[in-house]
Each structure stands twice: as C-alpha cells, then as structure tokens.
Amino acid sequence: MQEGIAVFGGSFNPPLNSHFLLAEQVLNEMSFIKKVIFVPVSTKYNKKGLISNEDRFNMVKSVCEKNELFEVSDVELKDAVQPFTVETLNYLSQKYHQTLYFVIGTDNLRQLKTWNKADELVTKYKFIILERDEDKMDEIIRADDFLSKYRQAFIKFNNPIRTNLSSSYVRAQIKEGKSIKYLTPDSVIDYIKERELYK
Image 1 (cartoon, rainbow, N blue to C red):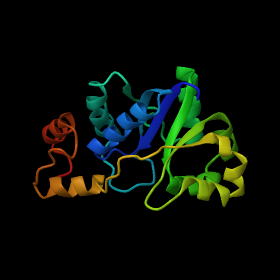
Image 2: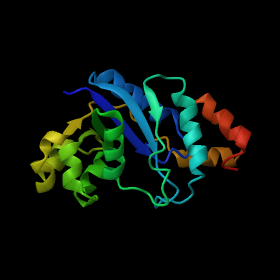
Image 3: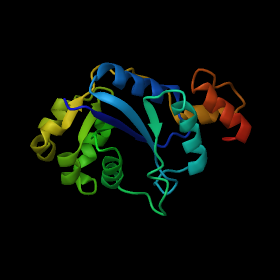
Image 4: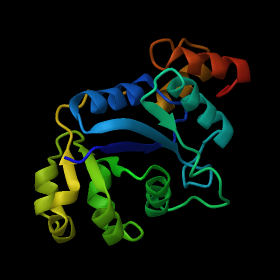
C-alpha cells in the first residue's frame, strides 16, 4: 500500500478521546499511514448546534500540538459555504502531495455514489472503511454496482476500538454540570472551561 495521510472529517463538537484513539489506532495498525489530518466541518454544514468554527478548530488543535503525527486543517472553515469532500481532498492533495486516505464509516459508504463528483473521489483517493454495528464492508460493496466498479479504492480497517460515546452525550454532561474527565482530552476540558462552552 502506498504511504500517505489519513483524513478524518467531523464536527468535533467537542472532540472526544475516542476520535484521537481511533486516529492513533489507524497509525498503529496501518503502517502506510504516516500522518493524520483532522478536518472540522464548517458551521455552514447542515448540522444543528455547532459552536463556532474557531472554538472547534482550537480544541482539536490543542490536542494535535501534543502529537507530531496529528494535524488539524481549517480548509473547510475558510469559505462562506461548506465545501464538498472532493474539494477538500483536492486542496489537501495539492498542499501535501501525498496519497490521501479518507476515513468513513459504512453508513457513509452506502451513500458515497450520491456525493458530489463521486467518480472523481473514488478514482483519485482511497477510503479507509470503519464497519459500523453489524455492517460488512464487502457485502455493501458487492450489493452496489458503483462501489463494485471502484473496489480497489476501499480498505477495511480491521477491529477498530468501538465506543458508543457521542459528542451530544458530552455536551449534555457539561450542561448538567457533570464531569467530562476521561471523555475528552484535558486540553479540551481546559478550553471548554475557559470559554464557558456548552452551558
């Protein structure tokens, strides 16, 4: 497998220990991945309750600063509109000149053919697939003509650490005045307290 960079997109509202644990596991288990880039989505993304781009970016950055193999990109935070995934990956490809591996779950794999410029996406980039619940990547691909045509673009990530922890749960804990220690990195907790976020 060609050496490259894994790209994790997400709202990171707030970022959780499980996000970074999964990224670390990808680095450990997939020797061809040499760096992980986290890409927070913009508040223009169709998702309710996102706090500011700046705060979510800074929280992820506070963790990445402590790991030389982690990086955060503001590529999706610069424009007035939320860019398509293909635009994000094209930008990162031009910046880093390395093979990019976009990390998605089987829920997104099923929808991939509906994404903007899907043919370009699966031709130019690779996808690391996280199997969700009882999903099987190979079965999903076999049942879909589009995915089957581009089978070489998809790599299954074996045995990811599974957790039901969600950012919405953490936000609820904060709102109720409860501890979020061990749910999110200490630097994120400090930032949330300092800025009085999610109250």
